[in-house]
Image (cartoon, rainbow, N blue to C red; front, side, top):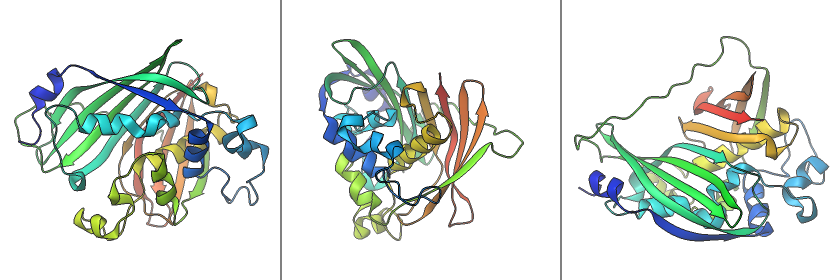
Length: 291
């Protein structure tokens, strides 16, 4: 078996040193669409609301940057853990949670501690749960919990794992917006560290069962959080406490995302669909908890 669940979950945690600076933050923000035109704002590149994502003198850090800080080492480290040897063509991102312990600095050095808390057996697939805890000299910064879906690796007799489905309110969303994904968005986003050829190489995408390269799930994740922060949280990234999603479907570069939001005390519930494909689900079970 390429995946040895017992070996993976019993392995000692691995540590990695991370480092980033303002250029990494700016590149990430550009990769998720900062400064790009939207239906709500036709000339946003030099708008102060966008410059806080792109101009070093005004920069603040969207918490989803945690998924790529240091070059996306959380995912890379997890897939090279003891007991795990999988084909990238069979790998899809299943879900993601970022929990923020304090505001992310524009630049810094930190230590990441990674482990595999669980490997679940979904029958025809396995789900690898990765946890990365990051701290600097001042204490904890963030925790990332990542679920990796690996086709063809189930059936080993393990636990099926929890099912955390979220019921959306039975009413119209409080806010709805669209975000347009540029045709070159995946090529730009991958410069932040996710080099999986699934997002760039048409031949590799066909091997994985897609007729063309797909957008990174974590790019959609960042686009969505930025939309929530900008429309519900007054642009204040420091209000975000945690952000959870399940990747329910793919996005192709060039499409538009429809992001619907429902306000509840201390949190925003979110649904993301592909506006150009009859509202096909993209992100589900999505919650932004905030202060």
